[in-house]
Image 1 (cartoon, rainbow, N blue to C red):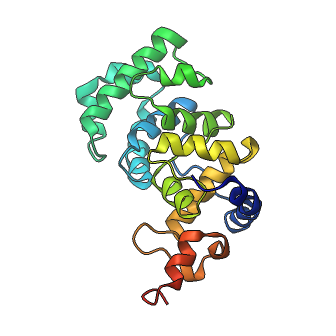
Image 2: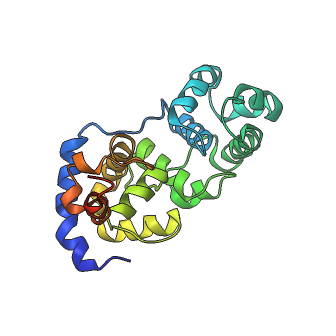
Length: 221
C-alpha cells in the first residue's frame, strides 16, 4: 500500500479538486424508493447504469414492493430483465431477497449493513450503495471506476474491491465517502478511462503517480 505520508499530503487536494470538477456527481441509477434502488443495484452487476435504467423504467411501474416482485416469479421476472447480463441469476436473487425482506423485515429495506448483507444476492458493494444513496448513511462502494482511479492515484493498492474499500475508508473522512465515491465514478467515466486515460488534460495529474508516469513516456506526449 502507498505510504501513509503520501496520502496525508495529497488527499485533501484530491478531494478539493474532485469536488470542484464534479459538484453534482450522484447515483446514476434511477429510483424512487430504497427497494427500487436495491433492485437496480443488483441488476447493475456487470451491466451499465444506462441499460439498467432502461430495464427498470419498464419494470418499476409494475412493482409496489417486494410482494409484487415475488408474485411476478422468477421466470416472468427473467423475461422482464433479459436485457441485462446474467438475467436469470439476477431474477432468482431478486425473488429470494424479496422473500427475505417480507419474512425478516416486513417488506421494508433495512437501513443496516449486516441486515442488508444477509439478504440473498446482496454483498458489501450493493449494501454500501443502498446505505449511501437510499439512507444517506456514510458508505463507500468500490466499482470498477473507483477501483481503477483510486489505484492510479496511489490511494489504494489492494487486489480486491472489498479490500480497496477498506483502504479508502481508512484515509478518507467518513463525511466524504458518499461524494468521493460518486466523484471517482464521474472522473473514471469522463477522464480516467480504462484504456486511454486523458492524463494530459486531467486536473489531478500533478497528484497522480500513474498519470505522471504515463505523461513522462514519449508515447503519451
